[in-house]
Amino acid sequence: MFDAELRPHRSLSPLGFWLLMAVVSVLCFAAGLVFLSVGAWPVLGFFGLDVALLYLAFRLNYRSGRLVETVSLIGNELIVTRRFPNGRLREWRFAPYWMRVTLESPLRHDSRLVLSSHGRRVSLGRFLTAEERLEFANALRDALARWRELPRTRPS
Image (cartoon, rainbow, N blue to C red):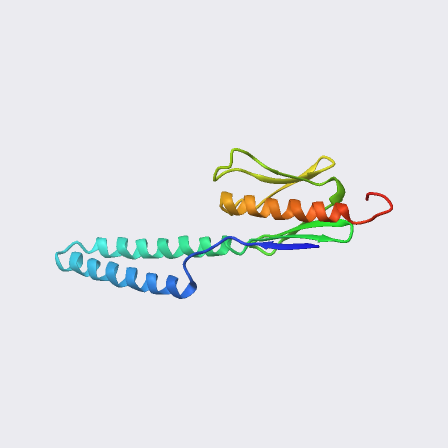
């Protein structure tokens, strides 16, 4: 009845990243050569260090972008799965009949989206914008409401 995959957004494509690194490298090398020509040779090394640190920062950012959270309403279970950038997998299973979807208000950039049932809770979509969290929370609430309206002999 419901299946969603949440991923962090990265606005710079891999090609854009390589183009940016090429431009920064050329500019830093050119500036370093100017300093080298006036006798300030250590500055060239610091420009190289700047490029290396910028590269490392982007690589770490892209690595964190591999986080994936999935929410699936299948049969009598709501399954939340989080795949971390290192490949580790964590899974939560909830009874959808008792599921509460809570979004902290007032809605701000750091408002938390929490799924809870029977004392267990999981926070989702920390990387989403506040509006995206609200949209996801409403879609999940609607899916849970539709699921609860299905004919059953008793709640699970």
